[in-house]
Length: 276
Ligand SMILES: Nc1ncnc2c1ncn2[C@@H]1O[C@H](COP(=O)(O)OP(=O)(O)O)[C@@H](O)[C@H]1O
Ligand SMILES: [Mg+2]
Image 1 (cartoon, protein in one colour):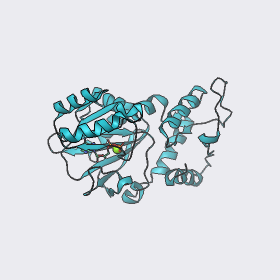
Image 2 (cartoon, rainbow, N blue to C red):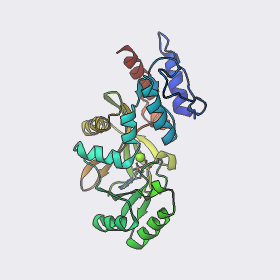
Image 3 (cartoon, rainbow, N blue to C red):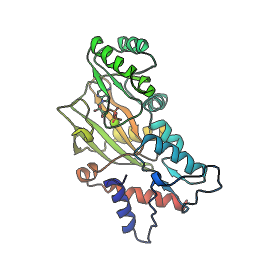
Image 4 (cartoon, helix red, strand yellow):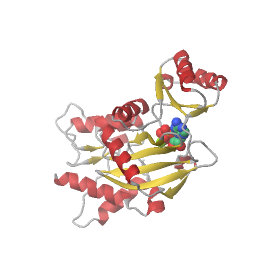
């Protein structure tokens, strides 16, 4: 799916002097012979931009197996595209992150929620834009939501349960390209507890403080990500916490809010990889 992001990356590549050759490959109509010696595609670094989780992960694995350098690589993509794997990586790296439980049955999910206390948050392990995440205000409400999930696709019975972080009505999204934090925005929403700009959260420039810079780079490193979006919250009790790292990140609201040429920086980073 060619979004504003993909268009702007291609435009940025065209503008680079010395000519950067770009080939758009539509994963939907490109079968990959995973047992062959090469993909048959032009050689070079692949920037993975598939929106679909499974398509993204599997074509990344296939292209890597066929000898391409893919950004983000398969290991990193598999960690950061699953909220359980991502939280494990953040916690193990010593990055402050909200208290989180994994549970795989209705009963153990309710048990975990008792230990977390209410309100708490349940999220699908795979997904974005805050979709199907729920704020659980009390045990009755939690039981109803968890019961609903029991009738859904098995992935929705992998319960990712998290303390509700007390914070201002905003969170922070930072962007890491290579080894730099290149931009950050506040995502502000007074009407929904989820601040995702895809849900109407407003984007405003956020200064990249040394703390945001350090946490963002550490978080990207914790999942092995090269081009990632890092989600942070300003907890009123714990200070700055990182709640997730995003793999194939969107930035159409961030570029106008910050004036940072994220697509250009992405192209420069990919070109630097070609030269290595
Ligand atoms: N534990 C939490 N406490 C308070 N707000 C949260 C919590 N988790 C998520 N949110 C809000 O919901 C939004 C979406 O959650 P997130 O974990 O980033 O999932 P998604 O992949 O859908 O973006 C966050 O940007 C934040 O505004
Ligand atoms: Mg998020």
